[in-house]
Length: 160
Length: 65
Image (cartoon, rainbow over all chains, first blue to last red; front, side):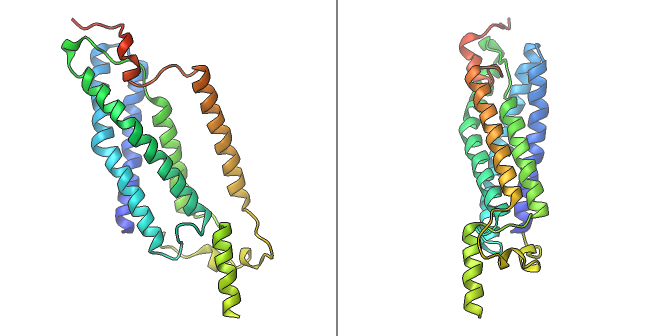
């Protein structure tokens, strides 16, 4: 389960970096054909790679934490990781259909529709969140949540 | 997540009589709040410009022959 969680989480991070490269190209390009290609790539990366990996990362993370001594709500680093992963996944699931539908609509050159703009706010924001979650998952900074602290106190009393 | 529990190795936090939120959690919360406010301000004032392909669909300026 840990292997699945690591692979899905790191795969998600890598796919976001690939998406960001295309997003930066979209932001700096005026060429309609380039924009059409870039948005097609972004649509594919989001729907085929990022969304499935995000959901897999969230589910395997929950199962992994519940199956170990860390618990889901006992340690701040787990709770913050969970909250940020849920937030990123929800935003992703909400925005992904827009990106995919937009990319599909612009994929046909005869439509005369050429995408402009970018989704840098989402890609950079998502990358920052994923990097932060990765760092606290690696270093596991100490700190019990109030619930974890109460649980530990009651265990301490029971053992006396 | 299967590495040694630093809380178990270091019993200091558990010996506290009252609960105290770790400093790194408070700092993280403040930084997150500032970033969220910044994003809200940027979006509300449109300083960041429009983004995403569909927002531009009704106002297409390019036309590919």
